[in-house]
Length: 204
Length: 200
Image (tube, rainbow over all chains, first blue to last red; front, side, top):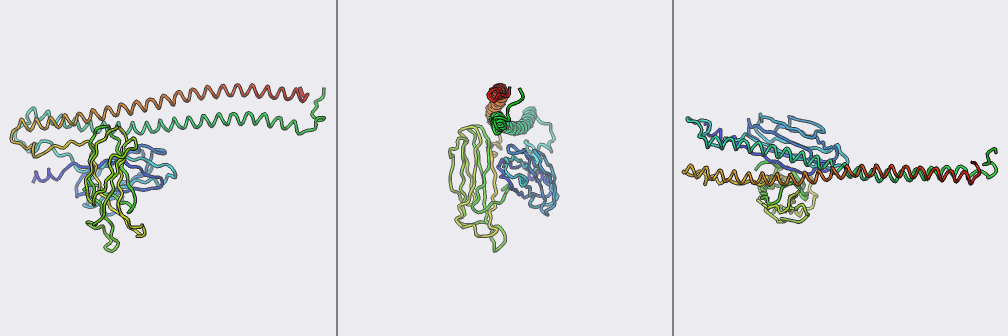
């Protein structure tokens, strides 16, 4: 029975990066068994104010998680019912910025890498212990790499936005500077030239 | 299969994968069509196929093939960067059917190194450890590739930030100079004007 249980707890999952156009909503569905643990991590990488609405519903349509305008979040949950769970990302509040969204939907738990590790009579050999340690360390590396990759992508996107905004605003301001200063002089001159030459004489 | 999502009949759905060069990406999909009579998705729809298009970061097309309702595709990245994987059905039906949609099951695996479990379950313990160690070494090479790519991206990021910084400084100086020179021109021009109008 224990072996069957270990077999059922397979770690699986999907991570995807996709573009969500403005005013759009994209939903994903996954069939889950009862009692399965799952975690939904998501992050907005590029676009607008880097925020998105997210909601998770169980097979009966009950809302398990609903957040608006979040930049990133992690939602762990245990499936109470068997059926199709739905999670949706919405950019409906945005009129012109499309967003790039990354999400990672992990299902189940990691099975032990050494078979029959739990019901051993003898202790693990040094080799086996070393393997387990390396495995756990590599898992930590995966998480760390993903985290840094996303943070870097988001920060680079912000930096590029900033750069183009600085350029546009600088050119615009320079243009306005010229227009306003030349305009001021022309306007002042026009006040004086409209009057008759005689009345423009001040008292000497 | 794993995750699924819905799409219009002629709609193209794309996935972005930002990966280093020389990485094998494998995709697995299954597509079902909505049947308005049965009000459910058909298990199999003959003639339904999906165009899978993979675009490299330099806008070259790495893969562009038509597969059946269920298929596996793979490609190896040549350049580092954002690769775009697009799926579009080959349905020629006009979008006149209300509620006509597709259900696409999708699973994409990046740089996974497959351990042949049957080979590993050898009776020879040393051999098993040997194979597992080779697998770990391959995975660590993948980690190294990702890290090198990360270094490239961080360099680009740093260049952008430094460019922004010098942009701001340069424009501030230019605008101050313009302000000063335009101010002087204004005063001179007005003074000359008033002198000519015999006000001063």
